[in-house]
Image 1 (cartoon, one colour):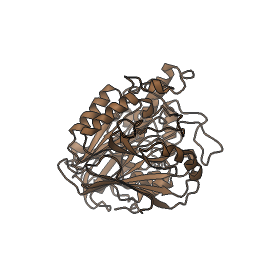
Image 2 (cartoon, helix red, strand yellow; image 1 turned 90 degrees about the vertical axis):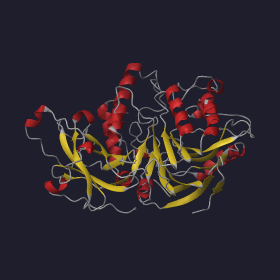
Image 3 (cartoon, rainbow, N blue to C red; image 1 turned 180 degrees about the vertical axis):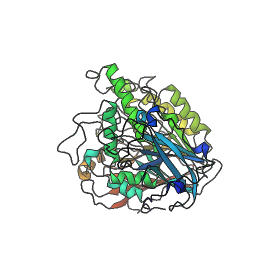
Image 4 (tube, rainbow, N blue to C red; image 1 turned 120 degrees about the vertical axis):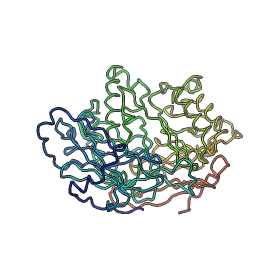
Length: 522
């Protein structure tokens, strides 16, 4: 299935809408403003940000685009609502259109389009595109999930996170677009909120950090103009969840990183703006539209009886960060909130799937930063929420093949998960694969990294493999094992870069933890 995308063809209006009849259930509701009695201004190319799909179900998938003829200037759209036609086909030539309809792109939603294309067949590949006036979008390819009762032989997906625009080029996305995948899990830090660095390889737009809705729209739009990122989105459905940089570094619920500089009222406004812009640029269902400062992010996806993927939100409900190990052990501290934790444990323990792979932002495995008897930790991840971590991991004993896939670290950590990381004989209850970044951290220095972390690894027997180079993970599950490949690019500071498989990890069905680590298997 991987390969170059067919060039979008401008079809006559009658052909483009010819199969719209009978698809009312799949057609987005239209709400046009009263000013539409006057002719709408014609647009230059509005599809500068490409197309995307996401959140696949057995009978539906979300189709996304945003009209933005001038993407770094608020989108450059008139303050009017525009009609956008869409269609889904069973072939890349669009000779067998199976669903089509019309959606509205309104100013209140940044002229973004979120179509929930329902009535599709499970476990099928489809192609889709949009049209506005005389303009036809690039073609996207997507895939629905298997039916809930299906038992597929295997499923294959990508894991990515952390794509700081200023740190390098998206070579990893270019290679990811060429993989044969059922979906991609993007685990946070889709944008970075820092002000532009004039010395960076490529500089963030704007003169400051984003605070307003227009600011965040421009920052997202800048990232979306990247051709390699567009290619990855056009090739695979994405399941996305944010971490911190989509709003503010290390934010926790209603507390910013620097409360001495951001009042509660100011940060609330910033959070409202950031979540709105995030929704506008992600392939989310319209039921996930933010309401004020809140957005329903945690959710789950079932891929037949082989795979279940709960998706976490570790920012909106977390207790504030602390600074000491004693505080990290305090009962009641939570990174998910009580309601989400109950939902997660119920989902995991009731799951009929063979593999239960949690999509998560921050590292669960204990991660000491100092060699020898002294200890130091980053309390922004689960090391700062030990009481909850211990309680949840103890419940993993009741879960079929629990595995966590994680972002955030800009490095690769393959770890066994234990009920008590401080005791070497503690029971292993699962595995965690913390994937590296797309660009964040820039080109790595593996020699310096291993000089610092290899001595710590000797004191951390649950660490099975570590690396700090750029790339992504490919995970594949079948009825006997889950295999994870670490795919690395040579560089992110030059546009031309090859990709290679640096290491392979195996988790066997019914055997908690990582069974095999092979740093040479391609």
